Image (cartoon, rainbow, N blue to C red; front, side, top):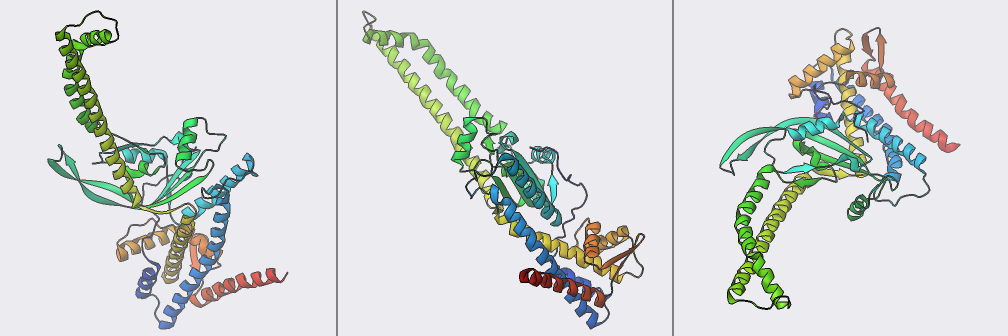
Length: 430
C-alpha cells in the first residue's frame, strides 16, 4: 500500500472551477471584447465545437476505464485465467487511467498523513473511529473543492453549546484495493470479506460529496466505532461504584454458599438454618451482580449501535456513486473542467491588447473569476495552453502567447471534427 501520494495535496487554492460552462460563456460575451454580434456568435459556435471535441475524446477514455476495471469489479466473479503478473499490469493500467481523469477533473490526491491530521482536528464529534489501512492492498483518496461550515458543539453533557467550524470537501473519491487470496493472511480477514460480500482482489471505488475533514476515516469500508473517553467514563464509573458493594457482599458470604452446595452434593454432614439464609443472600447477590453486568453490557451495546447508526447516516446520504458507476460522472466532470479552461484561455488570449506570458494569463483569469463569480481558483494555465496547442489554436514566440483569430480557430476545429469521422469511415471501409 502506498503511503506516499502520487500528487501532493496543495495548500493553495484549488484548480476546480465551480461555475457552469454556460455562465462562463455568457459572462465572457458580456465583457465587451467581442464587439459585433457576428463575433459573439462565432465565439459561441467555437465553444460548442470545443465541447463536442472533448466529449468525443473522453468517450475513448471512458471505454478504457471500463475495460481496465473489468477484472477488479466486485460485481464480477474473479477470473482464474489471469496470473498475478497480468493482474498487476491490469491494476497499474486502471490506476493510471483513473489518475489522469481525476487530474483532468481537477481533483487533488490526499496523503494519508493529511487524512489523519484532519481526523485529529475534528471538533464536536463524539464518535471516534478506527480503520486499519493494513487490511487492504492499497488505499487512495482524492478531493476537489472545499469550504467551511459552522455547527454547534454540545459540552458539559448538553448544558453548554458553542460554535465551531469545519473544513468540508465538496467531492471525494476513494479507491480501496482489496488483498488477493494469496495475500490474505488470516481466517478473520477472510471471514470479514465473506460477511461483507467483498471479492478478494477486487477494487472498490466510492464517490462522496460534502464530507467534513474529520469524517474522512469514516469512509473506509473496515471502519469501526470506538467510544469516546467521556462515554467510557459514563459507563465505567457507575459500573465500578455500583458493582463494588455487590462484590463485597458476595465475597463475605461466598464461603457459606459453597458450604450449602456441598451439603446438597453430600460433601457436608450438617447444615444450620442460619447458613441457609446466608447462602440465599449470597445467591441473591450473585444474581444482582449478573443483572448489573448485563445492564452495563446492554448500555454499551446500545450506545455503540447508536453511534454506528449516526456514522452510517452521516456517510450514507453523502455517497453519490460506486464502482464502475463513478466513471461516467468523473468523465463528465473532466470534460466540464477541460472545456471551461479552454474557453477562458482562448478568450483572454484573444481579447488581450498585447500577447501575455503564461503567468500573466493565469493571473488575469484568476482575477476575473474572483471578480465575476466570487470564486478563488488556482487556474491550471499550463494545462489550458497545452489543450489549445494540441488543437492547433495556439502559437508561441518565446514566452509570448498567441491564438488564431475567431474565424480561423473555428475553421481549424471544424477540420479536426470532420477528421474524426473521415478516419472512422476509412477504418470501416478497410
